[in-house]
Amino acid sequence: MVEDISLTSRQLPPLRARTGEGKAGGAHRRPERRLPLPPEGNLTERAYVDFISARLARQQELLGLEQSLREQQAALETLIGAGMPVVSLPKDVE
Image 1 (cartoon, rainbow, N blue to C red):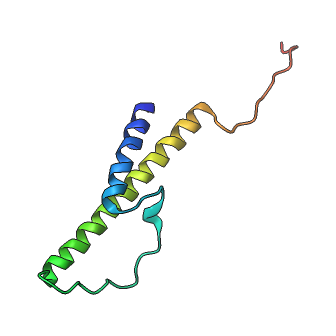
Image 2: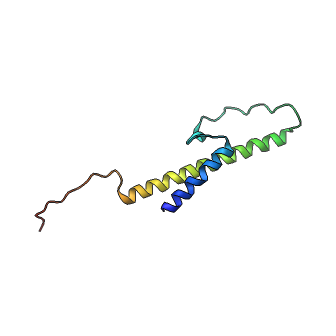
Image 3: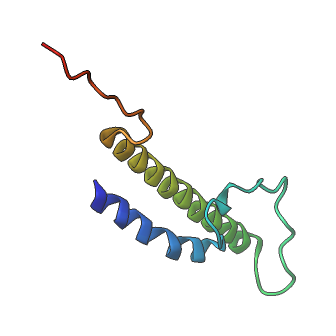
C-alpha cells in the first residue's frame, strides 16, 4: 500500500505539468462556462475541438489520480488508526 502511494505521488507532478496545473488541487478550479474562441491561424474548428477534448481528458486523468491518492492515504490512515484517541487499559483486568 505504501508503494502504491509513493508511485501515485511520483505520477502526479508530470501530469500536473502536462495539464498546466502547477499546484496540488489545481484541476479543481471552476470550469469555464464556454470554450474560448479559437485563435486565428491555421487551426481548424475540428483541430481546436480535438485540442480542447485532449485537455479535458488530461484534467480528468489528473482528478482520477488525485482521488486515488487520497483514497490510498485514507485507507492507510484507517489501517494504522491515525487520529484515534489513545486508550489505556486498567492494570487490574482479570
